[in-house]
Image (cartoon, rainbow, N blue to C red; front, top):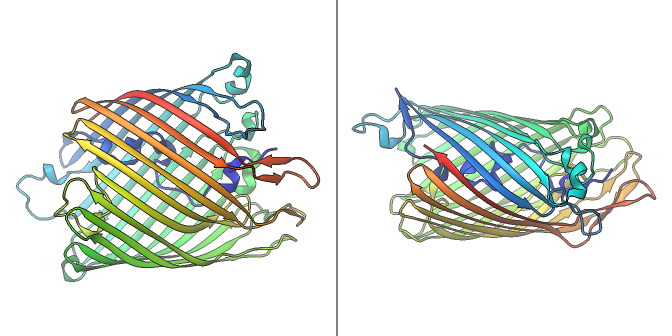
Amino acid sequence: MRLRAFLATTLVVATASLSAAAQTQPWIKDRRYAEGIGYRTGNLELHPGFSGELGYDSNYFLRADDEKPIIDVIRFRATPSLTLSTLSPQRREGGGDPPKLNFRAGTFLSYNKLFAADSANSDQVGNHDHSVNVGVNFTLDVLPQKPWGFDMYGDFVRTAEPSNADGEDLAFDRDSVRLGAGINWRPGGGLFEWRLGYEVNYNLFERDAYTRLNNYQHYLLMRGRWRFLPRTALVYDGKVGFIRYTDPSLVQHHASTVNSKIGVNGLITHHFAMLAMAGWAASFYEQSGTAPVHNYDGAVGQAELKWFLLPQPSLAPDQATVGLSSIAVGYVRDYTNSYLSDFYRRDRGYANFSYFVAGAFLISLEGGYSHLQHSPTYFLNGAERKGSFGQNRADATLFGEYRPSDSIGINTTLRYDGSLGNTYVDIAPGGPQDNLQYNRYEAWVGARWFM
């Protein structure tokens, strides 16, 4: 059974809701792109949407250049979505008292139909030609502008994803559930904020081949902000985690993790914003069986500079890294658990550009280059599969949309992602190897209706 790059690079932690469709659908990920005027129903507003897309995928199974055949497919994707929320500021008549509760919930369903570009590959593609991704999420913020408040959030994501093997029983189809809650303290009219929270994640693989990777995690979270200038804040982010796998054979190692960062976020001028955070992280993996453990102990952080093409005179410090018309460059260092080894460290540089003109033309370009440094990997009997090794990744996405009306969008998406250079990992002692290298190109055209 081949591993493919997924096992080497996928986060164990459940990612944000709706991420399953966000890779090539920016409106699912970002409600600034997704929503129109909506429909008001009492003190709530509804934002329905529907999209249809036709695309080409050059390497649907993410196979290496020496793993034949590399299968390209034609893809059709249909995605209905719905968001329900309390009234936006634009709909609050006459201002009045600040709301005592902010609520937001969303859902989407993304249906994929595949057609092999080469009829000789129809049988292999046929096992995956009706995949469905699903996402549901909610957020609740009680007394958002009072000295004391409370929040809750949760999401469920079902992701259908093939492996580089042919059979459907080896697909990486998985379900992720996340629930969290926190207490918020905001003395001094919000100049200082502190949040203490708790979060639990559960990740379930649907295929028997990967049930050993099922896991759950608990996190204690702390986040703080002190606005020492009108548009600039000192920020803190910290968490303590506990990762547990449900497989009694303990192929993967249980772990405790610590991550703490402090920095500055805010506007320097009406056009220029900065985010700079630095800290330290460490892992404590538990020994099981004969396989040794390896731990991370090192620096983590992020730096980003953003230039707004339009001035942002009233942007709050917690919003200083968002904007529809902007250019940004940044760097991230972090580490995360890996399904292939204990963990990997990631160093990533990135840049993005977005431009939204007159509510009618949107263009977004983003890309990045990452170096992943993996800890050594082992077989069940403790024999080394591969020592510590590096892997380079690259990605780029171009999205453009024209909106002939306030509720219709015609769009196109071009995307590349790849693992550069041959990286071989043993599948069995003395047996064949899996190459984690791949290149993938996608091109999509589509239309959507949104309110």
